[in-house]
Image (tube, rainbow over all chains, first blue to last red; front, side, top):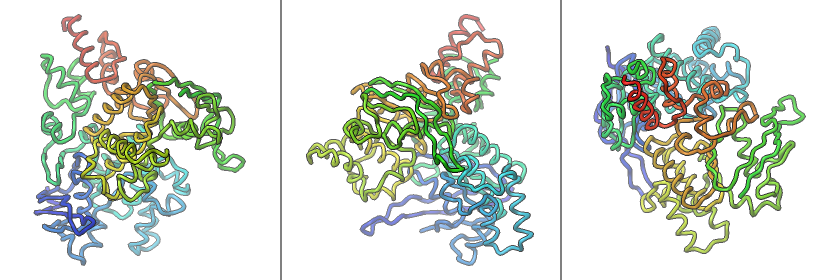
Length: 276
Length: 284
């Protein structure tokens, strides 16, 4: 594997009124490999979104440096290139849709890249197919459901052909069917299209989908490992304001009651399988 | 306060090509002190119903009564003041320039004295876990999403309402924040006996709080009954586009595999007890 994002001694300070500063990131060293699926979890205000905003140069370090695909984000000559390589999808799709029809919205990114119309057409069609919205190309996005709007936002990011997408709590406003659809799409983009995924989430159930879980706390990376290893540490997670996915919690309580169960049971399906 | 909804119909954009019937004849009654969950997928009519309870919309037909008075009429102002809502998007309801002023806004409008306002603000911020020293003078819009949500909730609590409506109260909160908030709201509800109405599509979360669940599907009441019954009815919930709570899902799988377990155990610890019970009986 080759490193895609490299973070070295990263600090980020937000200015407060009266000239003071609050340190949101306190020295982060981190490498994300190309093609990885990383879940970023942590309590409110732990620095998750601030960290992720450095992955595409939306924020620039107040100390330390961030390299994306070999490009230094704080070098103004690289910023445009960095933003093309790392796309962002946010919590509320209403805040990121800009055009009158779905296809115009998806075309917004490639149009700004000043590509020939035939290439724009091809990118829009490919992106809409990847999220399964081909049949909605002429619909006004405002008339779609929350989940469909979020898929339009993802298609818009895909049309810029990024190598990596940061999803910042993309499902927290969505109902279960939409949520499943978004998560399936995220997984498919990672597995089949090789897109590096950083998924910020408050749902421990979602974090379990990743290859690797990063736990943020007070502006630092407090834990880093595969989900099996992270969710073994119940007490530590509680200290950090987090918890266990329901299946892991049930398995743990059953072990407390003397039952012998294999480790690594992350989902209800796996737990049911182990019990039967 | 007694809430009565009688055959409520709401049509958005009536008389236009985009007319959409969001509520199609909803009837329900909520007694003082109940803890009710209103669930349903996006577009099922939950938010429209809640806005009717708050008197923010006028029924296309049917009635919404707060202690016998139609919720949307001027004469209902006193009743409406006894009902508070924290909406799903806190950034849509926050407008003051400090956290303290934001939370004090409602009580100030009630015409309360300075000391009473200060006491309520301090109490409400403590309820939602915000430190008044640290956060009081902060500008709400510079807060994190989870912190803003707590401010919106504190503003609703500071009204000391008889009916508290929380629309997706924990979206964006971290797991500990969620646990604490629900536990606090529940403790408070039990202490003062107010009515609590929770709107959500996270049924695992609802299972911790609601005694009764109203399931909306496509603008109609698809089910209304004890939480344990509605939230463990897999086919019903699936038809309405929702997921059963995870403990119920596990028990369903065990049942399909031939275990003689009850599936109406909504919380992890309840599922654990049920599994241990059945294992003991069957000597597995």
